[in-house]
Each structure stands twice: as C-alpha cells, then as structure tokens.
Image (cartoon, one colour):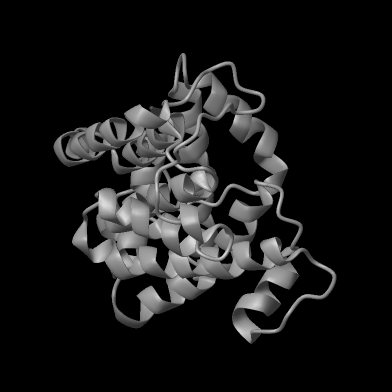
Length: 259
C-alpha cells in the first residue's frame, strides 16, 4: 500500500523527535487528550463541543445545559485515555486491557455493565451484518487476544491497528461504548509502536462508518482510511515543530532532524 510507504518516510522524522520519551511523551499525551476525547464522543452523538470538552477536562468546569451522560462520557473517556498511556510501554493488549478501558469509560453511565461483556443480543443500526451472540462473546474475545499475540508482527503497525479496530467492532462485546473502546485500542496499538494517535473528525463520520461496514467484505479501503488519518497526525506534528515534510527519494541520513 503506497500510503504505508509514505507513513514510514514520515515516521523516520517522528522517531528522530523522540516523542514517546520523557517530557515529550507528556506533551503528546496532553496534546491529543481533548481532541481524541471530543472527536470519539462526537462520532457517537455526544453534544459537547471541542471547547466545552476542553473546559471540562482541563479546567474542571461544568458545562451548563448539557445532558449529564454527555459530561460523564467526556470525563470518563479521558480517564480511559489516561489508562491507555499508562500501559503503552508494555506492548501488550490483552483481555484485561480491553475490560479496564471499558470499565473506566462506562463506570458512571451504567455501572452494572462497565467492564462486562453484554448479556443481551443487539442489532447495529444501519448494518446488514450480525455481531457476536452473547454466549459467544467470551470465546470471540479470547480468539481476538490470541490473534493479537500471535499475528501482530506480521502486519505493518498502522495496518495492525486498523485490523484490531475492525475485528473488535465486529464482535461488539459491550452493551455500549464499543466504538470508543475500538478507537482507544487502535491508538494504544499505534503508540505502543511509536506512532501517533489517529483522530477521526466528526466531519468524516459518514466515510468512516460506510468504510467500516464495507470492511465486512473488503477491508482495504478502511485500512487506507486509517492510514490517511495517521499521516495527517504525522503532518500536524511536523508542522508544529516546523520540520519540512520528507520527500520520497530523500536521503534520510541528510534529514534536518538528524543533524
């Protein structure tokens, strides 16, 4: 996939910045915390704006006139996000990680279902495909975790992250919050391998949902969509550091960031 080669080119510049170490890691964590929380919730219909999310998370100020659920979704998504960064150094994604992420996100919405697989059948609005029956979820999740452990290194890191997102969503193990946990898991996989988090803005929701639905038959376009979002994250960070974008054919030993 051509875009993966371009991402690899940009990643050499990102790696040179040592973003996943020390104080730089804290800056990256803080930089994406509001944006990823706001966009991930907005994709699912949360009414908070980006500014309201920022005030809530960074200043601790309440947002008047908003449903309490929307407030809980923002505050607790940020807690799950913080957990994501607390475990990224292990390069491990297991069942505990999945359940804990959901528990943190869902703890104030429906405590009895937080960090627990659903015990009811669900139909996904707008999808023609079934998700796992309740009695099969534990087995499907076990196979997913086994796939992560055994097959991860066979994929490009961005391709793996997209695959993880897709496979998790198709199981749909929780009563609610599956999309948000899927995006957190995808980003955990990315930062574990030194890549930047992917943000899917609400303006791209239709493309995102339709490509994910199409991925039941062919996941190539969905993988490319996620790769495009990763490339945008890379470009944004290089712009912030005022580093010229690398060009194909450029000798990376002559890169400005390496001198």
